[in-house]
Length: 305
Image (cartoon, rainbow, N blue to C red; front, top):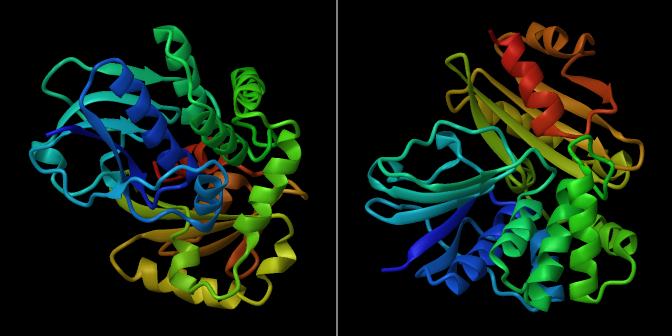
């Protein structure tokens, strides 16, 4: 049985493309692997897969007894069922090291960069493996998505260099135009259920014993969400009712470079503690806040202590 190369729950473009790229790289290094995902691609990811002729990985929800290579996560709350009896053989990630533990040594590449595909580009280089043109295109898009076309504070020089090199391989001449095309697809909300919008990019975290959900919707203009904001607020209240202390939903305007955060919490004061801004009713505007990973999760982790 091949090992699964698997990203986090509610997979985004980086999670799915990383699984495809890592499976290609591990396979060319002689390992028996297959890419997998914990869910179907989002509209943005579907756009990327179609544009570069890539196939969506198989969906896997239980990994009991399986061998795994993890991409784009190492936190148990973002893992599938059966992790307690799975064997983790490797991790490629750009988040903090989570609580996944292993019974054997593993190959781990965990870098403080804007995207897992940046890590994988450097892994390809390190092992002297050529990146196929279509996978390079997918990786390029993942980096543009995760770094919000280089606007995110998580973006590093390594991400920019990776994009430059991947664009040459993929034959993309205007990366900004490609990024904007992707974000227009990502911004489309018409015909999508409130549940699917909340979970389009959503993660649960354990914050000092409290289960806290944080989702993010990135759009080119916040006004796109005006008609669905009330519905989103109702939906996150339902999600909180499933046993969470708090659920926060970031509505990120990539042009204004800031986020409105919708709030449902047992203790809304935690928001002011985290960001120094008092919410007005059930939301707050956070100027300059673009990154859940770098600007939101660490602030809340401190506030919950």
